Image 1 (cartoon, rainbow, N blue to C red):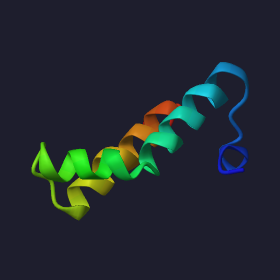
Image 2: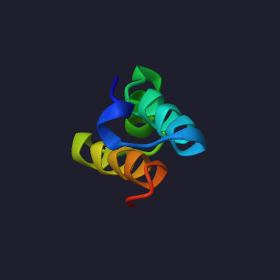
Image 3: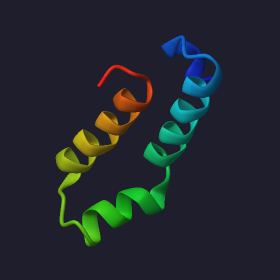
Image 4: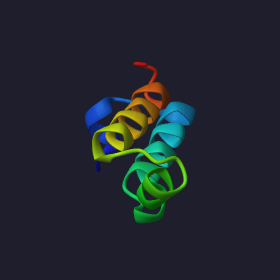
Length: 58
């Protein structure tokens, strides 16, 4: 459902779906906070950038 809003298709949609899954995963957030030492804003920046890049907009 989230992928549809980006207009991605084919392989780009697959990459975008993977990036969105990562961005919504609790363990990804915990890893960014605990291992990387990022605060919430930093984690948002990293994961939002990942999603934008996967969508070809980064």
